[in-house]
Image 1 (cartoon, rainbow, N blue to C red):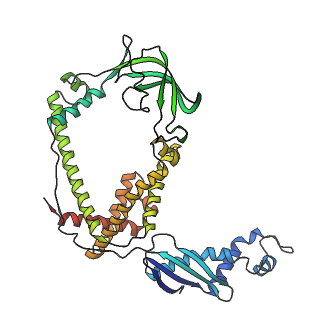
Image 2 (image 1 turned 90 degrees about the horizontal axis):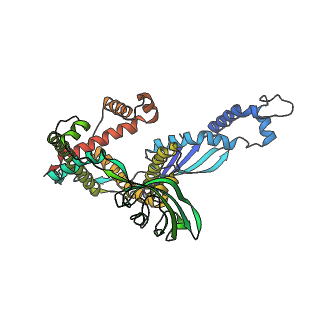
Image 3 (image 1 turned 30 degrees about the vertical axis):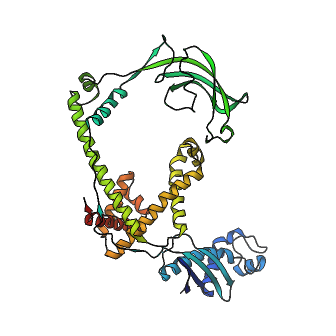
Length: 426
């Protein structure tokens, strides 16, 4: 057996002493020799035919030691973790304390483990269910979105630009009479009053006429995402090519017939109301669940290792990276586009990560408290649900996700349902 001792060195930290016998270590050395011998050219032997002893004499007695330890150390570590019955939350810190032919290998692994969790009072939680009323004003506002959707831009040449117009402009920005990067465009369409540009930019186009060339003076905000421009005054040279007015059609039966499956405005609004009321019911259910789970988190007691939150933040960032990089955008560029820094985004993710980790620990403890079980058929159904969600073959999902991890997801889902089923909804 590879595990020699298990010591709790501090809260959530366990030290394992692991040994690889001399015989097993010698076998690992020989496996490395057999795998790599074709690399060595030794005088008097054809390449790949030199005996192991000859290579060790030529290159040093411990020549294969490092590769042999690397080859089998991970397996012995995993076996020791299983034997110790601990659940680690990040990769252990491993130190090789001895390596020799006579005694084999000795390793010390410091593992951060899941915390001890206690929770009670998760049954019978009282929570109020509030359904937002859908008013006539709400329905009218949603219905008028159809008018906006069917609006069109019409060129006007008998007046100057106004708020709400869309203008086509050339612009070029200067700081200290020097053009700056990203401050230039031609035939750019801008809706005045949209707030798309920095404060003061759009307002100074109001009152200008098509064909005019002029300058506007602005000051970049102190929190602007480009460091060189933060709080800096700038001048933009503008050429106004065209002014367009948005024409919005009236909400009448003719528009309804042309744009929807309904015949009249009344029919359309009745359908909108029904859908909005259904959406309000779903929001109420979601809010109830959120309140219940927030209460569950509050009732949990545990000393959670900080590394669990850090690992979750890294997972969230990696997930984002996997979605934006295929589009040719780095994660740093993405945050720059949305006006955030990577560090500020991490702080936001840290808040989300803490909630997710704490809730998961609480629900997993409920699974243990209640002896909740899941049949293999239920786990299989979860694999199929994931395959359907991501439109991939189920075998691909099974190859990517460990059975025990998917089973725990099913169990956690049952714990959530238990909390909901036993709740007192007012």
